[in-house]
Length: 277
Image (cartoon, rainbow, N blue to C red; front, side):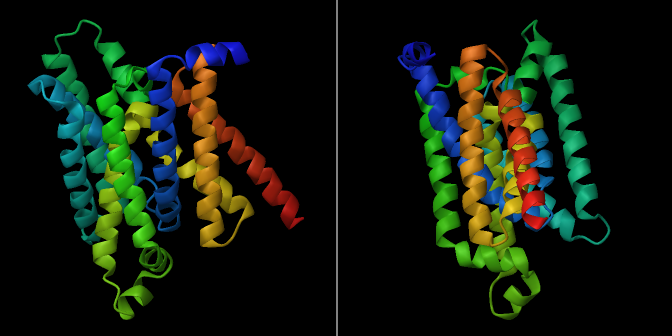
């Protein structure tokens, strides 16, 4: 097994996959804790479907997927935030509207305008990230590094304010914190994570990358800092294990990572039950 790993690590695409996996999983875990606590966890699902639709449009217009999908997803995050604040359209309804609409339009465009005969393969790769992380180019990795650096830096710089807005938005506003600004920033950062995670687990599995590590950490730890650190460790560990198993056993990368997350969640749930006993 060690010799097999040494052989595979001679290839750049394997190194790229591990670098992207570490960065994406770390960013997803950091934001996932906030999103779960604020009960915005399904925003990742909605934005991932928007990103799928944007990728379809980029393919039709023959544009670079990353540079077209990123601004579209950020705009969708802003719209989703605005719609969620509208009393006529509740947050869950807004997510459902964007999610279903973008997914349907993306699939329609890929069918009507696709020049590739293997449409089902393209759709499967985009939705489940089956092989895309193992075909990353150096440019993709550099873009991933830049976007991840933006997310991590913003999270560290505004950690205290994010903490305040996450737990008690009304109190944070009363003390002078501009809650709307930080909610907007959280939505934009989530959009960035969604875009860079598309190549890792695909559109349909991104929510798992955001939700499972946070929920697993919450089964054992109680403080915000401890949960954030634990969720980050779990997310990075599961991503690395998933990519490793995928390379060695030739399994779908995204699904393998999510399976690892599910296993860890079950373990932490059992530990949490034992601690309470």
